[in-house]
Image 1 (cartoon, one colour):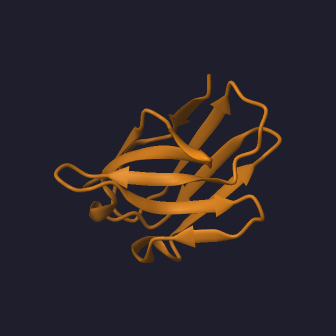
Image 2 (spheres, helix red, strand yellow):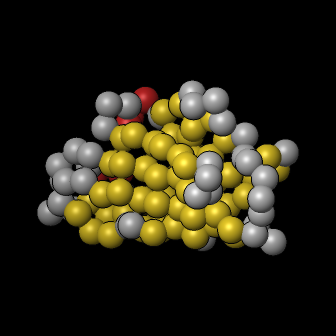
Length: 114
């Protein structure tokens, strides 16, 4: 079965950086899109960034210029480099992979606080 495992979350001060990684196992096929969503307490899950198999990307306006999404199809990984983090970035970050249906990881917590 397909399994997505995130790593790299934690506590960081405003202005700091974190890199999230997601490794996919249990499948040999290539996903059409891979990316990251986040969900803060009391809020709906929202797209942060995703990268399509052709290399094109989508970013939420609030993270443009600060976050960069990348993927390695051979390793079946998708990463999210987050720079200049802000308290509003605090959330549970979930890895997503899409091929006809969505697959989700368990999430990794990112807390931005001084």
